[in-house]
Amino acid sequence: MSLANRHAVVTGGAGEIGLVIARRLSEKGAAITLLDKKISPEVASEVEKLGFRFVTSDVTDPTSVAEAVSSLAPIDIAVANAGVHRGARALELSPADWSLMLSVNATGVFLFAQAAARRMVEAGGGGSIVVTGSWVQDVPNVDNTGYCASKAAAAMVARCMALELGEHRIRVNVVAPGIVNAGMARRQIEIDQAFARKAAKGIPLGALQTAEQVAAAVAFLCSDEAEAVTGATLLVDGGLSLFKYE
Image 1 (cartoon, one colour):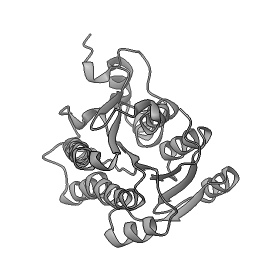
Image 2 (cartoon, one colour):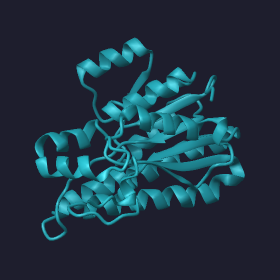
Image 3 (cartoon, rainbow, N blue to C red):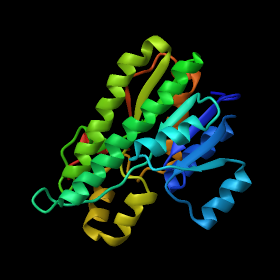
């Protein structure tokens, strides 16, 4: 699963899951560029120590994405990982939160994947694009109308691009985590006891996923071990989507 001599670009790279994905790809030999709207001083210091490049970019802004991607060295691996979550029942979901989730989670995925794919096509060497989806991209979920819809849209973007880009030897796949003990989900677990109880009881394998487990799945899909895999979703949800009832 060596990724030596490959350049990987990860959006949402200053977030916890994005940074863990980047570390895993780096461990496999890839050179790393992180894209994000902002970065904390602590993360910036870690990124510098790791030898990663950081470029400021807003995935919802076509100009920002195009300028960032065009400024980089040729891209072999693109991980569309940036995402936001605003939980609310459908009747209470605000237009602003609906628009935000669609803008980041769906449009942002498309804009970045499109820009990265254009670079890959120009280079002529193929490539791998991985979208960070979610188990709810295929499952209706209470309090998550906007998030479910946005992740479903991103998954369909990935499948359509996989169909069109196969002739260029560019593979496009989705990694769909369940409830990850990191980032947005961990914050929700900390403040929402009902969600924490639901998470603890609903996973057949009995444990929340780790960012490292998600990163391992991403690394696999980016590697030559997955050279025949495209248009697929790899669930990393501990069986959450199997619906364990007690």
